[in-house]
Image (tube, rainbow, N blue to C red; front, side):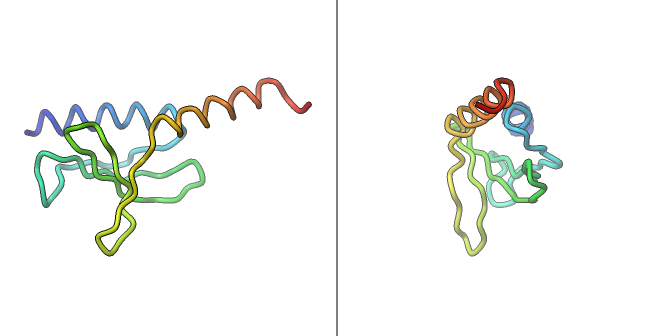
Length: 91
């Protein structure tokens, strides 16, 4: 189980690096040891918690047992577009 969580952490850390987030801590989820529980700081400096599943899905915890799925593809696309716009400069 620990290996699976370590693998999920490595994959999620790589994703965070690609979009400008920083994963500052990870542990197995207290409620399900086969899931990742990570603490992340986004590009604006906001801290939040994430749960990662064996299926490769990640969820931002919102509180009161609510969560929001992290759309990895959309975030990667947005990051790529913003990087391209910076390189091109103003129109």
